[in-house]
Length: 346
Image 1 (cartoon, rainbow, N blue to C red):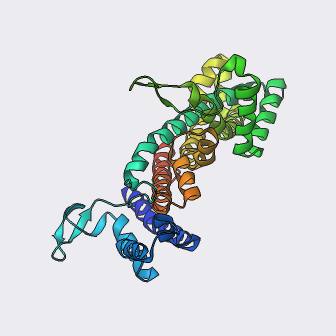
Image 2: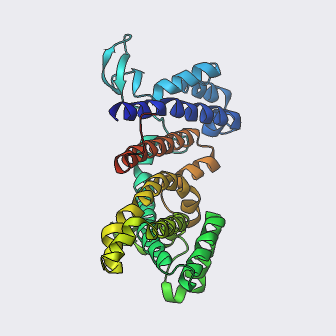
Image 3: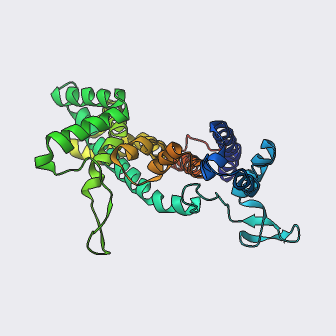
């Protein structure tokens, strides 16, 4: 098991390398970074100095390897970024170092700092959406199974098919129109809004939790529908199993059979689905954050795309890729612990 887990972590290296390579080449095809930094009206001397500073005067392959060294936790760096290593030259050290994602072209802030500021917003949104989808999905799935082929089951089946079929951005538009426009006098929900609100006449801040409701609902509807269907199908399969028939023959009540005998078998596949969905949910926050003006990694990335801020685009894409891969590998390991039939030996 330990060997299998180590292999899975090692398999993430070529995936990350592929993400970095693809994004590096795509961004270089978008245009000249110097034009974005200095502007088209800058003089030739300024542009030349910027090219030299950012190594843009070097061949593309050299730029690529310099960027790999810059973002890698192992490589050549000066003493400011080095953690542990051996002298490589008069001013550089080779060894373990702090990865450097560079500075934003727009405000010269470190990309790492910008990501650290925005990531909590994305994490809160994703965790809230997945928690809502999981708990509501399990309850509604069991309810659908209990009322098999009756109107609650048919209504839930129709709703889940609709939620899975419709694109997430369309679901978000529908939720905005219903709750933030049509029913605004009752809900008082805003079309856009930040979680952390700064008071105008003071330096105080407060949490505006109602602004989290619609983005989390829009993001969680699709996994909610999947979990409802999965729980319902597992519940129906468990109803026809031998251990349930045996429990019924012993005179146990329906609630006791569900709680003691069925729940664990029903929930194991659901936990597997949830752990896999959570990684996808972080990537799915991009358009939801943009539509609701939610301050997170997704909005930061799309703002960088619109402004041509290449270091932020690369840094955010790499960070999301690392989180996505980490969550998927972690999900595989957790699932293997929950279900011995799943092997992590690769």
